[in-house]
Length: 330
Image 1: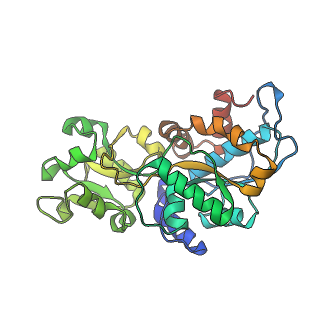
Image 2: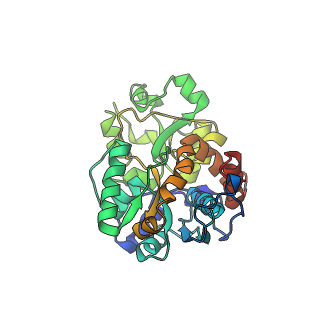
Image 3: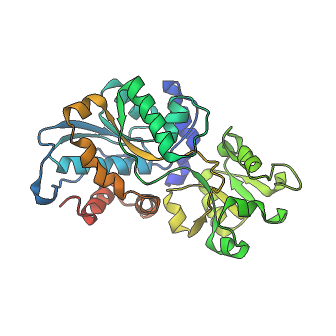
């Protein structure tokens, strides 16, 4: 099974229900062996010498990769790392951190806002959302959300490169301006029925569902999330398909991601989350993680996720290779 098979936000919602949550987020799959490569920082620096840290992650590809990057890098800085990456679902990794059984976890601002805290207000500015989440999490759980990385694993729509060129579209507003016959979409059932999903999106863009002048019901095909990518690449039965913005298949299938120019979708900025007690004990951690976060972008995550989901590489190998290529370790 590829990452596509379980890469739905519904799966994470079900897991999150175990801790009182309601909706959202994530993508991919991969089980973790609990191992990572030995390395050292350039020049043999060991700013975390003797620190004991537990790194966890959820089980989807991107989360495991981020966990392996973190475990490898902090171990290179001298920390004694317990690798608990690949925890099933979202509840187990989140709960482990809340319980104090895990210290560091990469999370998404949208996940915290909607799933963990049940907020319904749509905040489209990534920095504002991060600040709101940061303040809630520190106040309620003594979790410190470090500065977010420059990637956003949110919903989007994409088209094959040839279809985007043929229809001359780069944004969802341009899709809305197309003839009705060209406004064809592939979505999964969960996104179709979400309160913040497909139907409200069509309303925002002025092309309401089941409207002959908007998006007739026959223009929408509902299918498994994994099949959406290949259907979109083939432009059959749809010109436009729902994707996750850091999915490796975007690059592999040469899909063009359309701009959400009305800022409908909630940001899902990736952020390192650390227990406050750990920050107090090891105050150099935020500065140490900054060079890693600063390098992580949508394009890079698509490449790294693709190396695991498409090329079949081990996440720990991909993490090590990337850190070494950036001269963050040696």
